[in-house]
Length: 76
Image (cartoon, one colour):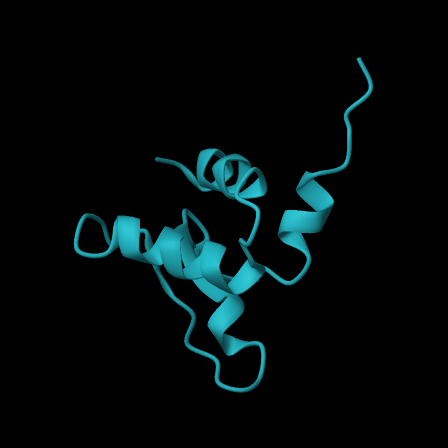
C-alpha cells in the first residue's frame, strides 16, 4: 500500500484524522522497508509527520490538512 492509496482509503473513513492516517501509514510500512519511517521532530504536530527517503536524501512530511485537501473534488 502506497502513501496515496492509504490516503484515499482514510478519506472515506468517517472518523479518520491526519494523525490516525500517519500512524496507519507508518504501521503498515514498519519493518518492511527503510524508505518510510515515523517523523523525527517533536512537538504538537510531530505525531502527524513521517520521513520518506528519496534519492536525494530523507524528506520530512507533515500531514496536517492532508485528509481535508484530498477530499476536494477533481475536475474531469
